[in-house]
Each structure stands twice: as structure tokens, then as C-alpha cells.
Image 1: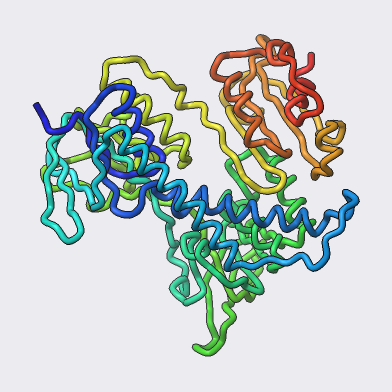
Image 2: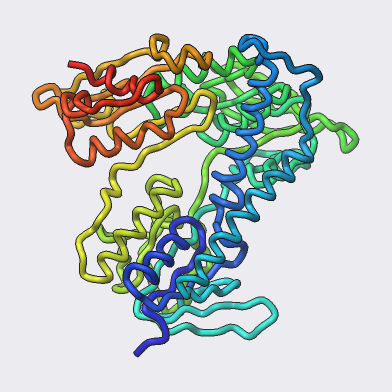
Length: 458
């Protein structure tokens, strides 16, 4: 008998959810290793803290505009220090909840660095103690990812930071320059523009949020410009300069439409991508197949070494918390000789701007590239009662479906509560529902979700 049935390295959503299900559902003796805090990047440096700041920013924007609802609020202001304190309280509460669940499910938690030194052996370096070797039947790698700092000259100047550092910033910059117009960049643009900071976004590709539907990109760009955010696409950053040590302003030099440009800012956020955290994870005895740090796995999440699996950001694919959790559930099923319970290839993606953006499945363009004859139906939210009474920004729901069968292939949404409603379409894609079947569902009035019925109308 081995000491453990399962050892998991990394306590992000993929790791801790897998640990809880392994111990609770499958009765596996489980150990969880985390070198920092429970919750991983998502809870401590990503999803939760960012959305907490976004919530405060959205409330502040709404309070300033409350007169249109017949309300009056004078002297509306914000305290960045208190906003950060609230963020810390939220993180502490969630971390404590995870720790309590680990105790309830009798998962052994080790605070240290895990290293795989054999097909069934994980060495844990514990702070202030001798390293310990854990003997286990199975190993799951859930080490997540980290922000990548591209080789831009001057990127090491004070004031140039990744999202990790910006999340801890207590003072408000006068001008924030964001290099990277993906999800992270646009969410931070939303936060800081709401608090009155001048924001400029430089994106090297022809459009922001380039991995999403073109119309979502265009609509978000229009909305951000309306709120005072400057967005430059097709902008290739050349270098970051600081004229002197005493000078607080940074100058970013970039090329746009073959013309040299420059912009000054007192804070620069670089969010151009993330890289799997897999360096130093394996001893010389283990030869795991990998590509640019991404661990290669088969359809069951298993590596080239039997019994060793990888999930989440460490295995590449969509770097999303719920994607990692889904992969973990399928990995556990494979370990226990059961079929995969989750369609891990259908993963909703959300952007928590105001209004929210959400997408799942195929866009019309993607369907066409796969040789699928598809059509789409789009409705604007301006006729939706809940949208009108709550004075929401312009938005829409677009449904993509196969022409012949009318089977739903995907959906793209930009509207209030999009992140909550996209699950309906994820369920439709997974279960092969048609437009008629989605239309047949009675949804309450007045709600945002009744617009789904209209979007699926025959």
C-alpha cells in the first residue's frame, strides 16, 4: 500500500477542487502541496481580487450617475486604501473556507514546494524543515501559470509592472498605460478609468480581445472610448524610456501604422500573456514530454508517464479556473476507471467589464472555417425590459447555429449578467439543443435572461 492514492501539486481552483472531489467522492487518500497560499493565482493574484476591484469601480460609477434614477448623492468619493482592505478581507474569507473544507475532507495540506522525483514519488521542500518524500499511486500537476514579461527594453524600470503588482497598488496613477488589450488589460482599463485615471491601451494585434468574436471586440472598443479610454491597435512596442532617475514619468515608444509614436505615463501595466509554472518541477529521473513549458497530455489528461497527470494552465489550453476544475474532474474519473463526466472542450469565457462579455462554443467565422454551414441570430438588448429599467449600456446576444439541424453551436453576449447567462448556452452546446428547444423554455419577466428566448425565436 502506498502512503497516498493521490498527490496534487498546486492549490489553485484546479488543484483544490480536485483534492476535495478525490477525497470526498472517490474516498482517495489525498495530499495537496502549495508553496504559497491556498487558492492559487485565481484567488490570490487573479480572478477574485480583480473582480473585487471591478465591483467597487462599477458601484462608484453607478453612484456618480444615480440622478437619472431620481436619486441624489453628494460628495461621492472613494478610498483606494479601503478598497484594497476590502479585497484582502474577501481573499482571507475564501482562503479560510478552502482550508476548512480540506480539514473536513481529511486532505493533507503541505505548505512547500513539490518536485516529482519518481513515477510515484513527490519530494516536498518544507520551509524550516527537512524535505519529505510522499509515496503515491497518482500525481496531478496543477501548478498554474505566471505573468510573462516580454523582452521590451526598459521593462525593468520602477513603475513598470505585471497584474500581480498592480493589484496591490494603493495609490492611483494619473496616467496608466496598458500594454496588451486582452482580458486582463481590458478589465484593468475598466477599473482605473472608472476611478478617474487616464488610461491608454496598446495592442499589437488588429483588435482587442482578439480571441473573441469580432463584434464583441468592436463593441467593447467603442464603449471604452466613450468612457475616455484611448485604444491603439496594431501598435508594436519598441522600448520604455525614463529620461532621468528623478523623472517620474515613463515614455513608451511604439510603432503604429509604420509611424513611430510615443506616450508618457506614470505607471505601465504589461499583460501580454502567461506561461505555465513548470520549471524545476521534475527531477532528472523523470522525463515528462513538454512544449515551451506546457506539459503534453493525452485525451485523459495523462502525461507520457502513466499515473502522472496535468491539468489547467500547466497543460495549456484555455487558462481559466473553471477549465482547470473541469479537467480535474475528468482526470479523477480516468484514475478510477469511469468515463469522463465533463465536456471539457466546451468552456465559457467571460470578461467582467460593464456590461459583461461572455462567449462559448463557436463563432460564425469559426464554424465556417470548420466547413460547417452555419447561421446566426442577433438581438439587441434595447427592447429588454430589465435592461431599460436599470439603464444598462448597449448590448446584444448572438446565437450561432447549424443551418440544417438548427443545433446551437455557440453564443456571444455583451450585456448585463452575461457571465451568469452564458451557462444556458454552454448547456445547449453540450447537449446538442436546437434553437426551438431553447425557445421552448419559459423564462421569467422582467429579467435579462428572457432575452435568450427572443434570441432563439424561430
